[in-house]
Each structure stands twice: as structure tokens, then as C-alpha cells.
Image 1 (cartoon, helix red, strand yellow):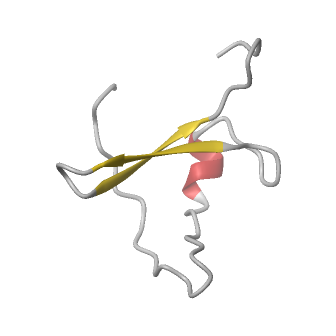
Image 2 (cartoon, rainbow, N blue to C red):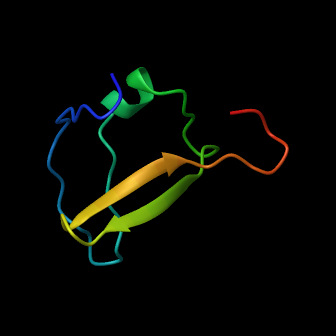
Length: 61
């Protein structure tokens, strides 16, 4: 369902700028700990961060 927001959890921004991702990300997306990269975008109109799975050049999406 494109464009549907699904609430997963709330986390505190750590002192070293880390944000933990909920474990539900592993079971609901095609990602692997320590391997998957994310592109981070800012939606300044909505004060939102957007994470997209990064695909290297030549890699199939």
C-alpha cells in the first residue's frame, strides 16, 4: 500500500545521534542487520525524515 503510514514505535535520539530502528523493520522489509544501507531524506514541510533502502548503481531494485 503505497503512501500508507504504519506506526512502529517511538525512540529517543541518542547523544551520539543514533536512532534505533524497531525490530519490526527486519520482519516487514527486505533488510539485514549490518548490511543494508539507507538513504535519508528530509521533508521540511512536514518535519519528517524519510528512509529509503539504498541500491548501489547496477543493483536491481
